[in-house]
Structure formats: C-alpha cells, structure tokens
Length: 257
Image 1 (cartoon, rainbow, N blue to C red):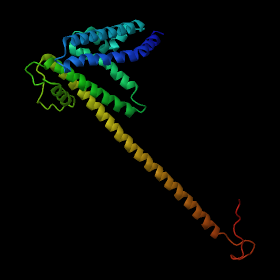
Image 2: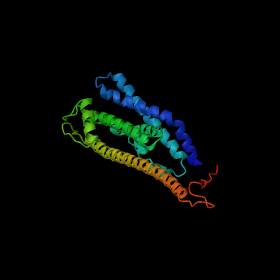
Image 3: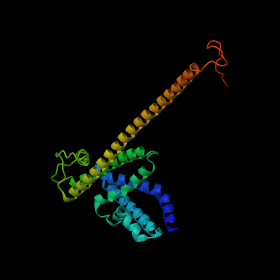
C-alpha cells in the first residue's frame, strides 16, 4: 500500500519536477554562458537554483516517508540523496538533471531499439552540455586551456568518446573529477552503442534467415505438389485394360468432383 502511494506521488510530481529541472538548467547555465551578466540577474539565478534544490529535497522527503522500507529506498536512490545532501558542491548540482533522463526513458518509443536510440541521443546530449558547463565554471579564469564554452564543448566531446585529443584539458582538481565522471559516462555510452549495433546485426541476420527458410518451404511445397501430379499421371497411364477392352477402347479414369 505504501509503495502504491509513493508511485502515485511520483506520477503526480513528474511534470512539475521535470519543469523544475529545466528551469534549474537555464538558471545554472545563464551566468556561466554570460560571464558579464548583471549582478541582479546573477542573484535571481542563484535564488532559482536554491528553490529548485528545496523542491528536490521536499520530493525526496515525501518519497522516503511514503516508502514501506525507507532505508532500502534510500540505498536504491543514491543520486537523489546526493542531490539533496551535496548542494554546496556546485558541479554536483547537475545531478538533479537525471530526472530528465527518466522522462526520456518513459517516452522514448515503443520498440526496444527505438527506446535505446532516443534515450542514448538525449542522454549524450545532456551529459555533454552539462559537463561543458561544469568544467567551464571551474576552469575559466585559471591557467588551463578551457576558457570558453566552445573549448569546453570540444573537450567534452573528445572525452566522452574516449578519443582524448589532448589540446584542451582541465587543470583544477574539481575539473579533473568532472573529467573522470565524463570518462566513465563515455565508456558506458560506447557499451550501449556497441550492444545496440550488435543487436541490430543479429536481428537483420535473423530476418534474412527467416526469409530464406520461408522461401525454401514454399519451394518444397511446390515441388511436392508437382511430384504428386506426375505420380497421378504415371498411375493413370499404367492402368491395365478393363473387361477385355483394348487400350484404345478402355474408358479413362473416373474423375470425382
């Protein structure tokens, strides 16, 4: 019963929490993308970030309260707990955008390959974007090579694809932690891509095999029918004359209709 109430709560707040995550993303990104933003707008963005954190905290508390086994629920949602408990670590605030991936997963199509494809494209785009924001936030103004959003995006792409071009790289400790997380994400993404491609190949080979087997079965059926027809003709021609009639005078076989 408790789990049912929690599921109802999660369905109820699904859209509002997703909207909050998008608003948070805009409030987090704007001061980073516009370093010369007016101070009043920066303060407003900070307030939005903290209000979003409060919403996620309330949501987590309610879900814990509605769970039958609360400790089991806490252990099963480490990211949600980290979002609430680590708000002061600025890059980790981006963890709350995981809720957007859950929405993508629920509305990603009917077929498994369609779900994987849409979920993969959406998650990679989101990961690259937020990693670029996070690393630019901690690297800009320092001695490193990542000083613009273009540099950050280029670094994120080369890192998540495990290419490691080497022309841009983080030099701060926080930036290196972000890089480590992006590397692990890249390994996971490559694993999903490889598995999806292998599944597609297996499916194509299976379809070709099924078509070949169906064609062979049709050919065998036609050949079987032709053999039966030839056998009937041979049997008719080999019948002996009846009642002393010659072959020319013997009546033909009776055809039943």
